[in-house]
Amino acid sequence: MIRKFIHEKRSWIIFILFLQGLSLIVAALDDTIAFTSVLYTVFLSLLFFLLYLFWRYQKETPFYKTLTEREDNLDLSAVAVPESPFEEIVAESLRQQTLLLKEELLTNTVALEKEKDDLLSWIHEVKTPMTTLRLLIDRIDDKAMRGNLTYEWLRIHHLLDQQLHSKRLPFMQNDLYVEKLSLEDILYDEIRTLQTWCIQKGIGFEVELPETEVLTDSKWISFIIRQLLTNAVKYSEASDIVITSERKHDQICLHIKDCGIGIETQDLPRIFEKGFTSTANHQNHHATGMGLYLAKKAADTLHIRMEVNSLPQTGTVFSLTFPKKNDFVHLLSR
Image (cartoon, rainbow, N blue to C red):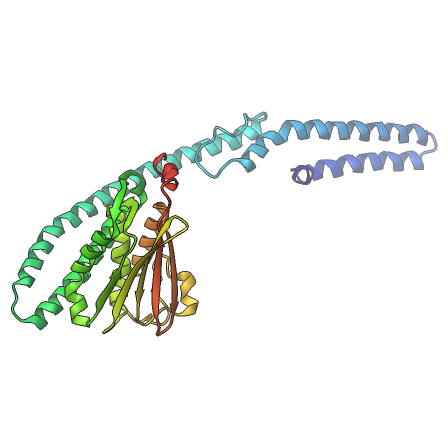
């Protein structure tokens, strides 16, 4: 702040130094003027000028210090009271800009909430014909056609599910209900939903769960597992998906392993990024790049550590490490 203050006052400092230098030059050229007296006067003038600069620094900088140190938000309470007319101009301009931004934020928030509510309402309305459509598909005798229609139905169902949870995700903290759950029940429910698709692709499941009870939210853990199983089935063919669990340091770990195409090494750090759809299968227009992103965001909120290990053409293993009971004290106290 001192450098900035000196830089701001540089024209005044240069002008004062010029005047004092001019006085010394005139005293040196004019024999009628005592040079020693002028030199003494210049010394005192510069001393008082330095004291004046120090006083002005103490007077002027607090207002600007609070501007530089304040958080980037719309709260101006931390800004110091202006001490000069120019500071008052800056403060008034900030107040007006903040007021406009608050009004704009309120308008956008209301519009966004309405859009979210309309979309959620639409998704819930669509679920009724989707349920009816599934019942009609199940009544088709032609197995090949039934399988193809079920696959397309699943795609629509999962896209709607992703949209629903993506809109709920920012308010996830308000929707949590942590309880003891059986991973086995959740997994089998999700596997049953994918059954027709798995039969069509020749995919089976090997489930071995010596550890099944975890503390988490049923709705969101179902969503996370649904995304991982859907990805495993999507990128596998005529193979088994192996699901196991284990206990590590008083924490339950769930592993979902497939023998699919795997993930390229350069893609691994980016698979949880929003909209990322891999470099190897970039021509796949059906991928949205949202499933793993939403699953990771939900897992982070639930204090579930999600990890992935994969090699191209060898398969992928997703691991979910559930938190200890004490870890939820902080989560639920928010």
